[in-house]
Length: 157
Image (cartoon, rainbow, N blue to C red; front, side):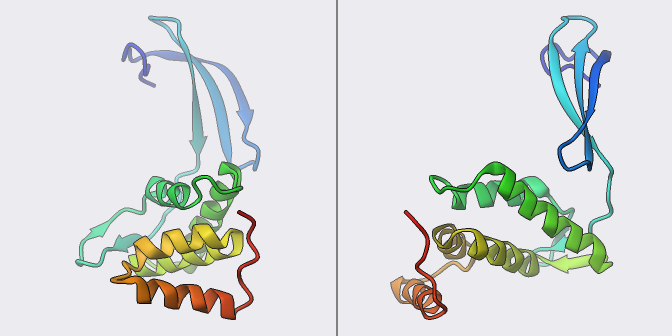
């Protein structure tokens, strides 16, 4: 493992622990050269389907993109990073279980919107406004009207 501080290629493991959910291992490492310590996480490499983008390109599923989008939507909302990561874990698990080799990015986006809708309606609307690329205020208002018609509007601000 390369040291993130000095880029030396040899480190030693100082401590290993099972992650909270039991699906990864947390390792404390120390660089042999500069003696600085850092943490790494090891998880089983699971086979996830390729994502088919709107323009037809195919790329590997990237958890960090989903995490970044959900974090932006949940900014200044009462939602912990642990809750967001749990939702992403559920999404990854469902993608693994579906058994498909490729999946449209739109299905992933809809899954993220559904997860956010259950967590926080403000975060949901923020994500939907970017994801659905509302062209004007009428489309945005239509989405808000749908939320309110379904018994929404319960989120605290």
